[in-house]
Image (tube, rainbow, N blue to C red; front, top):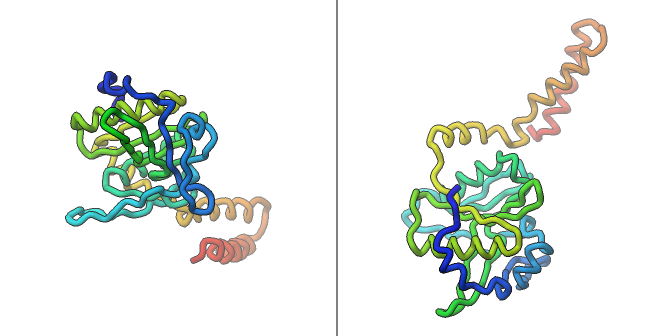
Length: 227
């Protein structure tokens, strides 16, 4: 994670109280509220993506959906860098909920109205909100640094954080990719089978009787898992 506190002179000219936020409200309608109030009143982590990520010609990875063990639902991603960080955040004990692009911030500058829809919104275990953007590069451009400073100030004004999520150690990345495949419930049958074995042989009984009980349990387990 990179520090988003760059170019504070740029951000210092912003009237945070005038910032608006757009989000997808109940019933599919688009809501618009003052950010200062909505940040504590709206559960953005439960909102669907405000804007889907488009497929771009020439990109090796198309937009897709990541099944999150943290939320028990799919999270949209739009790039390889974003998919990687969704995967990492999905196993981060600090994160209790996450959503893809559920809101767009709008504010006024001397040059006109500006808008930005952060790629991710996180809810930490302590209740704090976090907005985040993902990048594959180690360095940000001047434009990106200026934008990050503004978003960081907008977040800080309501007690939130803003993260810029950059490159990840390749060894750590490969290990997490391998482990991530086992976070889906379809891989939890081993735990249930171990519990069934302990229950079947909790009392003294002929071996065949215990095997028969496990056989019945496996049939039920298979049905529960949809196999």
